[in-house]
Image (tube, rainbow, N blue to C red):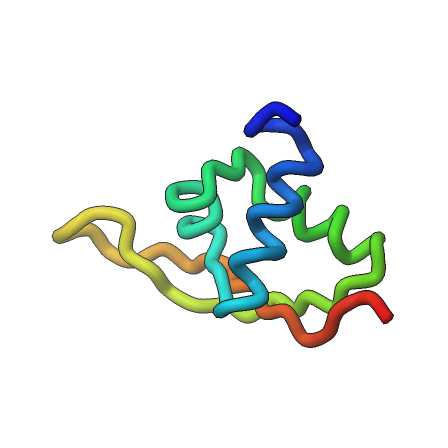
Length: 78
């Protein structure tokens, strides 16, 4: 499977969410996910209960924080 395929991005995000909440910035920068909301939407359609919380996160030193979504895995597919 290619590292940028949809299923590979789904796998990376789900693996991270099993450990801790993940923001859109973290998903893009750390997990190499191009459009995190699309990955979350696919996982939700598969039955994963993923909640979105809003938080503020800086992107660069000295710049004001951005309001971003933080995804939390509440439960997995039965």
